[in-house]
Image (tube, rainbow, N blue to C red; front, side, top):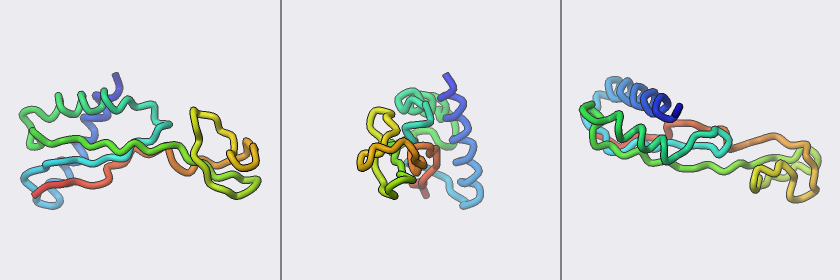
Length: 113
């Protein structure tokens, strides 16, 4: 379960940011999680909740925005959402594309004081 180690790394990053910004309380940690990361959102939430107990993030909520896979076709230049991991342009059926979203694992913002 690599989600637990990812949750702990998120907590460490947030704690560093709390120190940098002189925050004493975090109510929510908002992250963006791409569909291509292979990270299970439920397992990540569970690992986060279990890992914040008795820390300065105790009670903080992990809010996960799941980011779909989007591609940009190199043949026709159009953007499209990749459905069911079928990397095929929905406009011209080309397989020559760049992935433009779906690989994210970012802390988007914190809610705290």
